[in-house]
Length: 523
Image 1 (cartoon, rainbow, N blue to C red):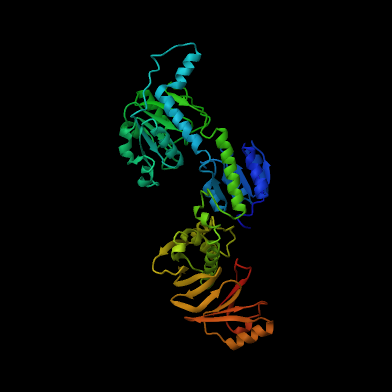
Image 2 (cartoon, helix red, strand yellow):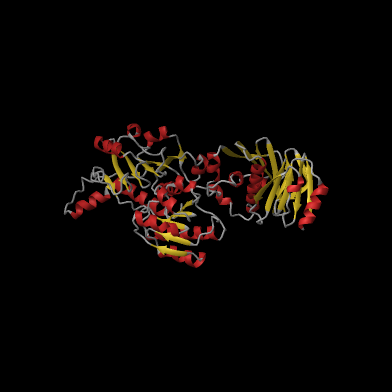
């Protein structure tokens, strides 16, 4: 069943009504809204749905994904997907998508609010006023003008924070291991190594995902290198700032204040941080605006509708290569990749090790990953796993096959080559039809269509005997190709009994192109 075959969707967290409305009206999808399901209720109900949409409350565990035998997509109405077992979803062939832009503005504005609140101790002063006090001297603050803000993580939210805080004439520096320095320079952030950032900053804000590499990113060692009195903000994910190290830095005066919207444990049972007088603590409000909730709900619904309509795939966090899969220009090449993978597997059923998938020609320059996934599907034709473009390379590794995409400038011709086990298959498109161009160093005089029924020999073919067998069955020989020791015949249905053609072994290979069959013969 296709990844785009999503007919029933369960929404298990509270979302704006626009989400369900869009799914129903634009995607013709049956929607069930059931916020607040217990983990056990979710396990018992998920088997009936093709899609699941969550915010942060629902935990999409491996057990949920296993129980969801029909699941094609899990949509996270928000940015972080740490409540989804992405690895388990990938193994199950389930797309995990988020809405990377939906709550960016709200999270950025909250970050800026916390920076302002820390600089002037606004919440503490307001609380003092409500207690009937007038402590003007106690709440002496500092200007942001001329101060240095370090931004760790310079994606959408980090960028928006930088732009806003520059209006206060703050100097913005930062670090991001992925985004190039020339890109961040365009919005006024100078990138520096982490070791150079700590000592320069008056304020540090984090906007990274929670990964093993970012857990405890700001720790005792980092605090020791910072200016005394540095203030830190975390509106991203609890755990990026080491909470025990932060408490020690606050108590020693090395850290002058913290604005925390997220915690390692939510809600936190240990109140040492939240009760500290220099900490402004919030109950995870980064995306808690009407605008963000409406935007995230609408965005995830529209993304799923685009998936269902096979128009585009946006926000796929575990299969970024799939973003090209729904392009009309790419789909014939995907079918070709799968066909060549199946052909290679049929000729060399025990092939293992590295399989090189080489694209040539400018049109395929950035398509290696998705075409590699397509080839892997073909190589795994006889597996009992639910293999698709999301998980095919993962399962290929399980059986000892490493699919390696590469791009070659050697030829201006647009084509796809699949090499492994000492054999190279060369394919291309004839119009929009996937075709076999050559085997090894030998090219056919004309492309061999992979849309229909083929017979292939690796030995000399008795053409007269073949014609007799075809005529007896009412089949016709449409084309016949010979190159480098290989003979390929395209025939019409019905498929004849080929047992009389000698020691040829019949292997049937179904191609997804037109529900035809590819019948390969080898001595």
